[in-house]
Length: 397
Image (cartoon, rainbow, N blue to C red; front, side, top):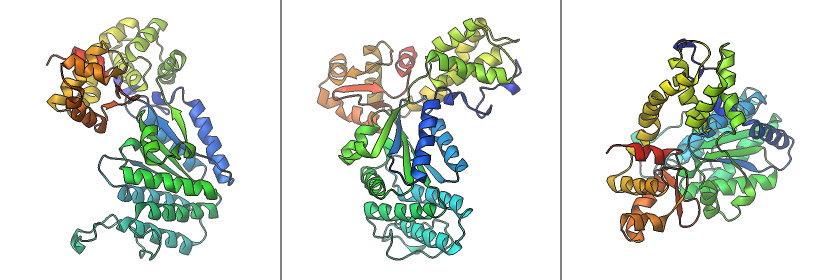
């Protein structure tokens, strides 16, 4: 069929397949927005799940929902070893601009921007020369004595309070969305938890929506023991068969095309119900189909092309980040699980490789930091990427 019309191509369609089956999460966030705007207490939200389940797309949809309600909204993607001040400043600058459109007191908006600028400038090292100092691009003088102590925990509480009160002026709120939240540095995680705790006590209209890998709750708990009371954890998993079929049927039908039930069976078997894979195999099947409707043969012909694309862009890009020692560890995990999406005991990995467990700890810890594996529970390790074990067993090194 016409590849130009391919509804599974990136950016195609009005609603990406990744959002199929997420109505419950969208409805729950709608309630959060309403409750917070009315000054009622509500916990911030944390989405967890493996890669490829559509967390990032869902996060983007939540941001759009907040904007439609007149909220200020900013989104960042955390990066390992990177501080939070600079990206957070940019995200909240965007949120303040969203609110400024509705605010009737420009002086009040500028005052909050001054606090934001003071917070942002603390991202510069104290000994940095003037020519090397980063400027946040906020065209107001930096405030003095507010959010500029240099202590990220104190400063974040003060900044969030200022921004939330600005939103309160116009009867809405602020949503701060943080993708890859497990990569936020420990000091910054602690500061975020403290700020959320302070705001929950005061009922200020600001919510943090984080998204990350399955071990994110453990990261937050290790930072602040009370974090479990601050966040509502929502596990985002692969789609049910019904929702997976809807993720295929909806875009196909928008193009006034069809797909046989047997082809839907084949797509579900290939994708395992993971939204990213549904999109990859769906795109390839559409391109391979010579005519309407899409048949099981079209899916079979398309599968190798989709596999090759995933091997490079989804699996391969992650595998290439691993060192030889780390690849050995990953391969052992794949062999022990027979390529299935299952956890494995770290002691078993050591026994499989004929090594002492302590000698493998550096490789395991590095793989966790790189986001390739996560600790499902004490003594257990699992891939963060679905079907990664199958990919590894299929490689010819």
